[in-house]
Structures are given as structure tokens and as C-alpha cells.
Length: 121
Image 1 (cartoon, rainbow, N blue to C red):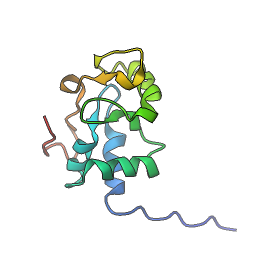
Image 2: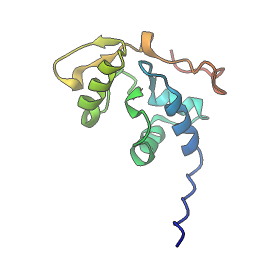
Image 3: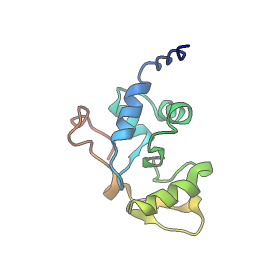
């Protein structure tokens, strides 16, 4: 008995996961950054990809534009940021109030095919 075929991922999903998987420990991108790197996709698209297909990816390295994690993921994301020594701009007792320092922690994609593309400052 053979196993069922693995479904093909929708267009651009594989690229999103490839970018997210390449983000080094302690570095981050915003949802919008990832969307731009894979070709003019918006932050909601990236969020939906991670929600549906990204359980095995380092999803905590993709943040909101203000440097925060989605509220329902904040506690786990903050624990992972601290474990990876991700630079924080605001440390707080409530995980939903913690912010990553994007000016320091934002990854430039160096060494990857998308490295020459601009991401938001």
C-alpha cells in the first residue's frame, strides 16, 4: 500500500516558507518584509501561510510591524526570542507588551537569492 501523494503547495507558499526557514536565530522579519521578499505579497498572505503551513517553521521570527507577536502566540514567541537572544526594544511582564528591536534584529537576507530586494526600514 502506497502513501497518499503530498499535495502541491499553492503559488508563493513555498517561497514564504523558504524565507521564514532561512531567518537565523536571533533575527526577525515582519510579515510585510516577507511578503515583499517573495514578490509583492501582503502581510495577511504571509500570516495565513504561516497559520496554515508554518507549524514546522520558525514562525516566531516573523513579527508585526511594531515588533510584537500576535497576541495568541506572544507567550511562546517571547520565550523563543529570549532563548535566541533576540534584541528586545521593550521587555515587559505581559508577553503581549514585549517588542523586538527591529532596528537591530531585522535580517537582511544576506547570502540568499532575495538578498538584493529591499525590505521596509
